[in-house]
Image (cartoon, rainbow, N blue to C red; front, top):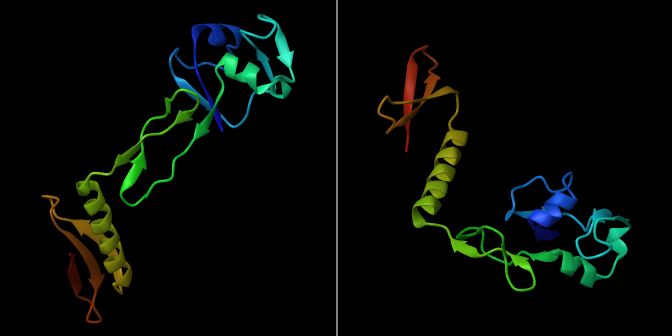
Length: 147
């Protein structure tokens, strides 16, 4: 994965490839096969651009994207940024409230999956409680509070 920060010059030279606003970081799977380079034969299309030396790609603003290792259960990646000679992501801690929300949802989903005969779920008007609704063998409607 590579990325480039869109400049007015690179956008003007390659409007089909870079439609984003100036200053936006664009990620690409690979170096473009053809490009109007601002440093290599400026203003002329270069086919086989990906075969040019890495120094040319760097001069034009293309740098590798580094994804750091992190614990997805308590951390997430922040916004991609340029860091001296590469693009990378900062690692951010997930707030405890969000972690708790995921754990509670998983517990509720497991409880729901183990209920037998439930044909619908309903939430109270105040949004605080959720019930599983099922029909008993006697034909009566039964509700089960989802903890």
